[in-house]
Length: 535
Image 1 (spheres, rainbow, N blue to C red):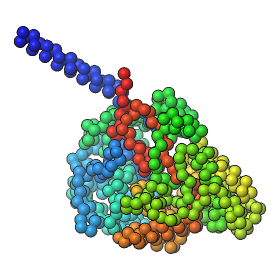
Image 2 (image 1 turned 90 degrees about the horizontal axis):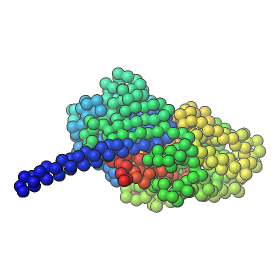
Image 3 (image 1 turned 180 degrees about the vertical axis):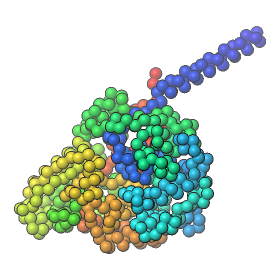
């Protein structure tokens, strides 16, 4: 009897082992997530890539000093802990034992190199200003001090110290930002095209680049050298590079895509919301048009105001975008916080119209010398290829013709082309938008200083520049809030841009995809996501 019991126990253990193996194999067979954030990215270099699609790729393959968990909380990343001095301006980070995808140790020196590379004028990164809260960072970026004067230093291989210009409440959140991810100097120096293929792309995050078929797909696989690899539930993410909206929707609805953040026709939005396929969530972002203030007729503020007043923003959000977007009655979107408060709830800075104010628009246009649109030059609105951008441009084209007698043509170009057009100021009116880098109004304001890298309108205002200096340096919270409000007032009064609406995130999510975190700062995180198995 005793022998029979022993044999039964052995048989049970064997079958249990076989069952676990089968279960694990089943998980492995279904552990790939297929996603899209749009077409071919401009760059997946952490110090260069700035658009949301580039950032989604980089956040999966790199990790900063802090990281985002599946609930959106900021938690330790490459830094296992840190100390903050009594002035709240000096942070000392202690780098955990972690490795790059090629097996080399992650060092504090990798962060020092990456951050100074971002600021180096020779890098010419349009997002260098993201580090301006660091002591002397702006001066170095503008060529007014040496690299050694910047408050960034690796004290040793495992200790990274940062000195700020002033206490900065959003600093730890900002450390998650993709442009502050580390890169290795030996990798960058060896090959100027290191980001272009999997053989040379070395990263320190949860995933590594397995394959990049340009124009088709980017495939990432779980990084076996990632320090927290046991928390990563999927073995592979395949990003399809899609710029055909019908094809993107068909791929999702046929089950070929698990998550789609870019490719679907706008006319299907209502249906997709109703059937539960589309996830609608907060998005700290503003959709706007750039005016080229260096060229006629938009060098005249009265023309810019007439243009803005002629637009029916309510029609656009109700009849074009149709997902709960809000009319932009100001520039800084609803939801941005100042301390613990929603900035929009404590600020009275609102001056833009929801519906067209035709009478006032015509009056201003006449004062600018174009009564009833007479002699007004034909203008072109340029936008990056998107069916939704096209429909918005068509709605505005109609408003300007109907309400002001202005003839407008519209033109779509690829994003890389639009980016170059904006940089060169080779346009009259161009579609654009801004996503918050961190949860503070400054993220929407600091790019508009004179000569700012994102100031594609060529606009300049001396009072505005002084206000930004106050906002970035004062420790007086009341003065800071007043300066923020006044800066936004100036933008709304002079209108170097024309805000249209405040975004919401519209992302198609398969019901079997679990624990994907959709960030109000844009895009999604699939670090802890997995496909729920079905029998």
